[in-house]
Length: 65
Length: 263
Image (cartoon, rainbow over all chains, first blue to last red):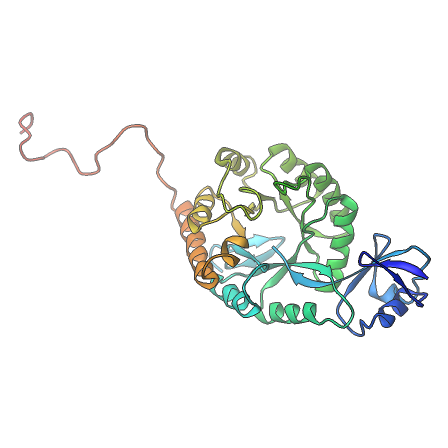
């Protein structure tokens, strides 16, 4: 399935957001996620299906002003 | 806590909020946080690849500092982006505080104040404590307060410009119109004298980043800004004299030697 992850096109096997994080080796990294610009809570990732052409954002703490 | 800064019912000794971006190294950032004696630091969220631990490493440094975090929505250009970013920040940083930026112009990074008010309304409705990055516009300020913001953060000049106060009349008017609202000058300050100047106007605090992080010696500059903020606050409380158009001798005139006109 082809989706966008952090702005890049990728072919992935994962069918849920949680599985995607596992497939992309996020492990227990502290990240927040959004699917098609909607926030998805960490506890909801397992129940969040992915579909063709979805756009996923995976973000982590960063320096900011 | 004497003369504490109160923001959303939280009290702080320091009136300097510090940004964490663009320091030469994490070690210098940590030293600058200490030297600035700040109680609040701003942080952000950015895309991260699987397997990277950069975000966690930074977050550990911030936690060690003991400062409260104020996540931002820096770079967001729409209400939707800002709201979603705020929601993600709340989960990652475990705080309802959000520095709300909705950028409307690329050259000046001027906020889109229409989107700002709309996003503020949404986020307040979701229980966020919103710190809106705004222009010094009085009407926008009124709308943000109506939306439920309890702190306002007007710019002094464009982000990262270091120009100091572009519109002192506007900032003075904003202070006068909203005497009970905590006002934090956010963006555009370049030197400790700029910080002292806005504190002398009665602003409650300043938020600094580039002026410290890009200084030749960020740690020393953090200390200098802390002193500037402290001096400006002390001066405001001491009620500065009113400027005059003509001279007035400070030394008593009566009794001057050689004064032929008097006894």
